[in-house]
Image (cartoon, rainbow over all chains, first blue to last red; front, side, top):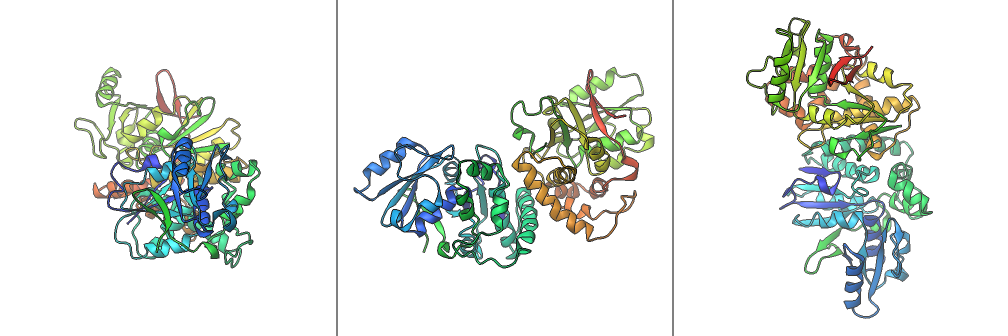
Length: 258
Length: 258
């Protein structure tokens, strides 16, 4: 059973309990988290507030903390890195713990803690995440971060990709939102496919990228001069991102799942 | 500029001011309203509450009021008719004023009063409504009723049909919700078209009907034994429904627009 929630506020109370949540913020938090973890970060600690992020970073062993995130899409003064996935290189990430605070993505994650298992979904690690869910018997909830409490096109697209692939794998769609984004993805996929084969090799622009530029989030990132971030976010099943990212508890942190 | 709001609660405060709202509740209020007005009702007075509907009906000239509506999809005790469009025949409607109260459709209409012009959109009067909007220069807002504060598949579909047709006619899509349902409709339309030509003649089952059965609203109406209502709601551009329905004010009432 696959439900989609187009905004964290649209999760019915108690619905996630006992289920698996896949949290999505394509532009850019979930893409950045996958990049950080596949380029050497040992864990990502999500924080709601800037002060909280600083306090947590201060308590980590000297030289192991990396402070990252954004407010209104822009880097936070005094932080090591912003929210651009491309900045999370092997050099920046090796042996570090990323303490991260973003507006929409963090809120979506914190709204999903009731689920038994929480995964982070992005286009770059789409296939790996689907593979993990194939035989899942618990209810699956795809939770879209959206942008400032508005439904976002790019999160809806990825939610649709999950709904569509899982429906192909004999999972039932459990709510109307899942049906809506399923249809959206079928439309986009047909157009993306008509562009021919794209293996997701680093450096190659996937046709999905044009779709990611279509929403308000894509336009905002472009305005900020960060169009490269969209190219990275649209790299479907990127070879170097084939991982499942899962939330571990006590303390809360995102790690690559075995 | 075409914006879509997948629920009345998702309309940003003040957004409708100076614009045109197209209110949608495919299953079934907007379909029923179009039927009532094309089968002889002179006006439809929308009411939030059952008692209010009775009080208004009592004040109309003897023999001219028709009380209609639903609660939880079922007819209201003591009312003349429920919310099944097919019940609004010429015999039932001739010379009457329908005083109507439904849960979701009425709420969406009342949430849209700030717009300068308010229209009622259904699949049955889709082409007529689009025709009215072709040269519209004010912002257009498609407001979906949804079902009990949840996004509905069938309303999203019709919103997508409006977004798609208006985009073809050089209107810009103004928010991500419009882009989402645009893609959904493109997918469904392709499948509907592949079924060949359907003129929307009364009595003919349009392939859209299969899609309207896909959401929770369609399943609920089917459970209530009212699958015929869905067949009527899916009759795209029905020959006998080629009208624009507009909200007149002082007092609030829905009428066929000149």
